[in-house]
Structure formats: structure tokens, C-alpha cells
Length: 284
Image 1 (tube, rainbow, N blue to C red):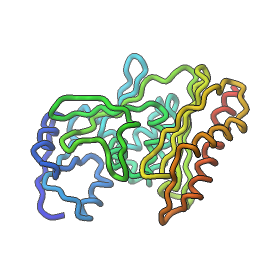
Image 2: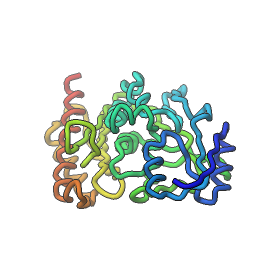
Image 3: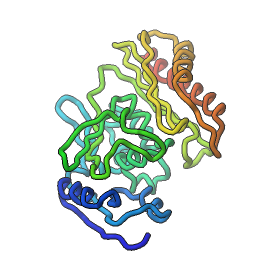
Image 4: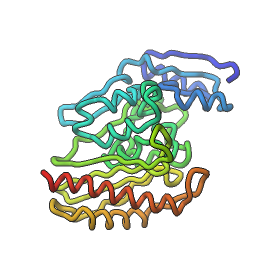
């Protein structure tokens, strides 16, 4: 890795000041599961800014209106195991639980998974369909940005070099919201997604949203399917959702799968999720 300076700030302001002074070669250390590998691969880094000791970054908080705030240093496994998250936002808990192995999940953070911007990240599709936002701090102050605008390409985001994600924020869910996550991979064990997807159905608004990941250079939030009311046929709705998704994705070929395979699997995940979410609604 070469020589680098290690800093352990105690506040967000101290952390962003270090990032600003680093001139683009300061790196944020939270979980480090992706960063350490990148550093060993030659990623330039003069200053390592360890943010794990900033108290507010390690908290999961629910606001009075039912919003969820996940601090930037909250572990993936803590989100996967959180009973209220599993009940209110099951798609997010399922996506978190799908990441790597148990050892990785006890080290990695949700904000880090997003910041790394790998096309196959498992937290992005759930957070996209749930209208996730990022709270970002920098020398110019704090801002919130929709997650849908964050990903620019493979390992490229809209985060400036002197900015730090402080929290992932989800708005309160509408009454009756049903959501879920699904993933296709090469093996039954721990593996990267060939395609992953999350869907959220609001039965009162009649909207069904889906996001597709690991299919192109960034995850895609598909325009909502409307008119999906309670009693809608799950199979027919799944076909409509698949058609909608296929009209908006641009799958790529790579060493793990062809573009055509990814198109077929994206459609299959849309059908699966529609059957699951609408089928549960019928049962209730």
C-alpha cells in the first residue's frame, strides 16, 4: 500500500476537513472490505480517514414520523438482523442479508456498499424502490440527495472527494406497503449477483416499482407500473412488470453472464417478485 497517514477524527466536521485537505487522495475507512482490496491493488491514498469512532455514524434511528436513518458506520449484519427493519422494510433486510458471507456482513457497512458502487451491490435495489436518500456532509455543509441520482457508473458516484455519507435515509412507508428482494447467482452459497432486484407495491396508490441491479454499469429504477390494485392477478402483473423493466434496462456482457441471459433473468425476477408481493396481498 505504500506510506500513508492514519487519522481517527471524532466528529464529522473533522473528517470532512481531512478529506478536503487530502486533495483527492484521502480515503474514508468504515468497514474497509472493499477499500483494503483496492488499496492493495494500487488505489492512491495518502490519508486514511477512519470514521468508525464518530458516534452518530454508528446509529440506527427511527424518527417520530416513521422514517429510518442508518448511520454510515452501521454494519450490514445489524441491518439484516434488525427486527423492525425486517418488519417494515423487508426488502432492505433481505438485500443486506444477501451480501457476501457472515464474516463480511459483520465488517461491511450499508453506506460503504453504496459508496463502492459495484454494479452487483445488493443494498441498492431495495433502497431505490423505497425512495432512499443519502445525507452527505462536506466543507460546504450538509445536503440530502436521492439515491437514484448517486450512481454514475462502475465505482463512480456523485460524491465529491471532500464529502462523506453520514446516513442513509428512508421515508416512512405508505400503509400496506409490501416489498421484497431477490437475487440470481452462480452458486447456492455466497456469491455476487448475476442479476438482483427489489420491488415495492403500494396497494392504496396502485403502484408497483422495481429496480434491477447487476445488469448494467449501474442499478436502474424502473418507472412505476400503475393500476396495480388489490386483487390484481399476480401472473399477469408480473408479465407487465417484466415488459416494463425490459424496456428500460441495457444489460451488458461480461465474464459472469451474457446480456441476453441477464435480460431473461431480469424478467424472471420481476415475475417472481410480483407473484410474491401480490400473492401475499391476496392471502391477507
